[in-house]
Length: 225
Image 1 (cartoon, rainbow, N blue to C red):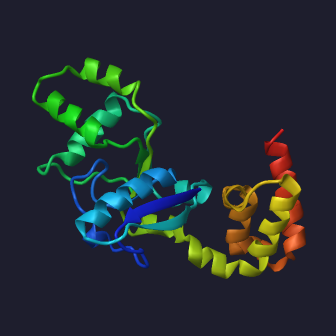
Image 2 (cartoon, rainbow, N blue to C red):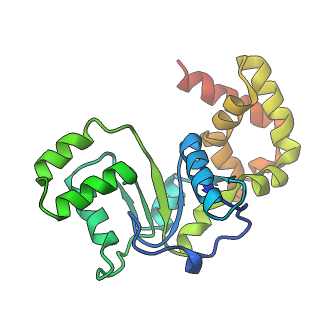
């Protein structure tokens, strides 16, 4: 999965000790699958630091490797469990949870204000959860531990490592499927073929880009039917 981090500077190295505590899913490095959300946050944090907002792109290996390596918590939607978890993490007196990776919706400013109303007793949990059903879709992933960072890799690093394969493959993908570069990149990096290519034990990287492309094309034709 391609994900994005909005900041006032490019992230070359992730330092969890510099991450702010008591956020939605606790202290950690946050990304989102929605680029426009990362861009919005980059503008906000950029203004605070009197700098231009910067987007750093990453690949998140959200497959079997991650599930085996890390303790992962997924929140598919705003619900009571999500609310209790966010309230727990935003309480400075709470202990850190034991998940390596947490994924789910965002408590943005509007939602945070209603959380405060809930904590003050101005709105019931049931009414608050009803409101959340109509909230726009949001998304965030928090990488909480050093181990979890093994599942995240800079796009630039990945492009450099597989440039001899990725560049001609993406060009061919754009032509055959009549799509732009952004769509072609998303399809490639979200594919099982790329996951196998990234796993050096498969030795798929030793094959020509044409052979790898044929595997990708079979996968995409099957998924797009």
